[in-house]
Image (tube, rainbow, N blue to C red; front, side):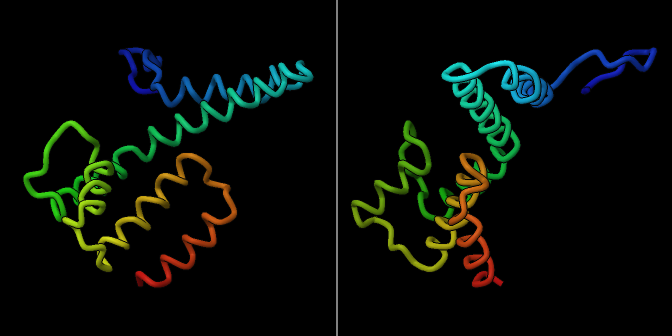
Amino acid sequence: MTQDNDNGTPTDVSSLELLGAVKSFLMESALPALSGREQFNARVAANVLGIIEREQNLHEDLVALDTKAAQQWLPGAESGATIAQRLARALAERKLAPDTDFMNYLKARQLLVTAINNPRYASRAIAEKKWRARDT
């Protein structure tokens, strides 16, 4: 809960709390009562809510990482495209040399993106262990 009134009663619910409540309902109440295609669709819906929940939790970290990259490698770059798109364009046009710092940015970004999309992906854990060991 995000706010209390004078009586200490919660008055607002965050979007993350709402996502969690709907996801819990789907997983704990709806899924056991469904079968076949409906159960599959409910599981997909719960997974989508999980992705949205993780994206909200990690969005600021991803924006900060991309903003730092733009400041380092895209001074005065055009607007309208995302930072990732502008970096890709700069690489394709050979305006950016992929040095060690840039490769470390790409690795950090990929770890954040996979933490949002599929944190249990087996190769993610392997990459994180390998990449983090090299960074220290």
